[in-house]
Length: 426
Image (cartoon, rainbow, N blue to C red; front, top):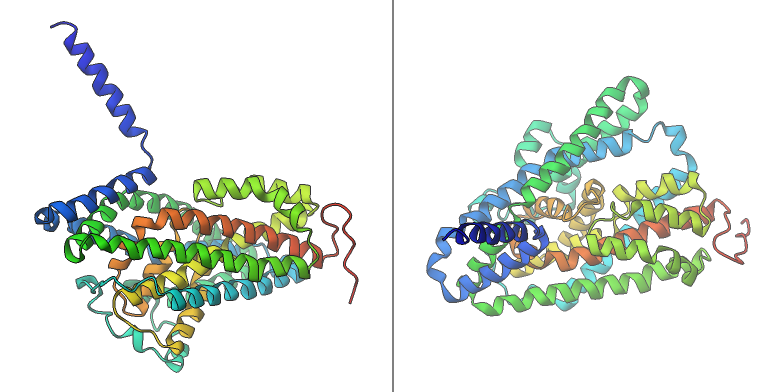
């Protein structure tokens, strides 16, 4: 009798420590499996847990405006001055835009050829009823007219990501032009961005429940075979990233005469860390050190590498174009070439507000889906396999930023690696 109580307490304490030690990623996998089993064998209880899917989606939507505004303003206005950006900043921005555009093209090409969304049947919920059908009919002329909001508060209320990004960019440029007088506002935005990162972390605590409820609802409604298109989505992304590496990043290394094997040897540990943690920020110190060992001066690496964290997320950009069309395919919406080009232009802007933190791409994806009248339920479904995709796209993000740093260094006539000739002046 006396030994039972401490034994029970000890066992319960061990169980509690074990539960606390389970990471968010593992909880997502656990709830994903549980949702699959519930949908397949106990569909009667699905209506009771389905509201958690909507709760999580609402949480994601409320993050969009403040997170994008804070990250864009602190990133652009925090650069210091227009003079400090200089020619190096201009070259970096041009390079970022070219490469991320190619990433969008590769993503759209692969998702249209392989069509991983076929076989799913996502229908818009009540939270999408207001937007359903409106965004999909957007024309190029309407897109241009729609760039600036008539009222920023109205854009925030509607969750119009594109207008929020345009407003935030112009606001940041104005703050940068003013200089020191705008410093308190920039400091506020820096603090706001940190708060929103933490806020995002709190919302992501709902992800396991949202994922489990979404999987249970999908399996109960469509059957257990719903899992196969999701596995096809993962395979499509990995294939698209591989194509991007071979057809875009490898030729860039050749064009700028960057030693391929030496570059890979220097950054492999940082890329592996980013892959394992799904956060390129966690690998930033290691990547910075690796680039300096590769021969990139600190004045270049400390400027281009962090700049790329906001403007050169190749893997996330490719993923967003692929995921958005995947949801369209799964919901039975056939986007025309013109609509996909408009989506590409929109993503070229909205991806500049994506922070290099785990699953931050979901925030921009939700805004893109809303703009084209596509159901946000697709996000909860994608989250079931998002961890596998997040690892790959985060690794490509970091690799792309390291390569961008090396490219800018070569344009500045810097020797990289061993036995590398200086690029001849044109």
